[in-house]
Length: 89
Image (cartoon, rainbow, N blue to C red; front, side):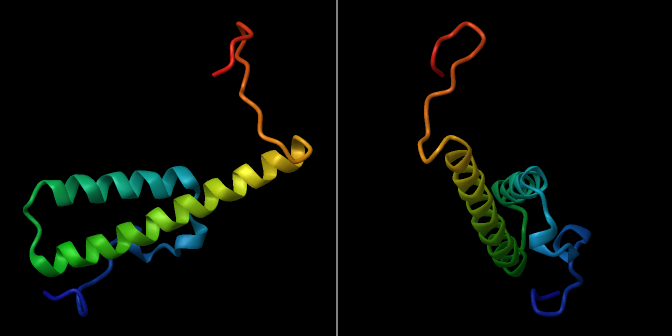
């Protein structure tokens, strides 16, 4: 099968923008594992790479949005997080 006419997996069928960060990251990790296994056909590798790129972009966007929200909550600045022992992490 070629990438153009193969059936999308259940993960690929989910709209990217419906994915939570953790779900997108888990899918990205699975893609990396499959690609590192070296057993994908060329068309499957290209499709996996394309999906991985989309997932990576989504994760970056979601992290940037979370950082923006934290800055708003912290009056425009990011600070080191102090754990229960009072040390910055």
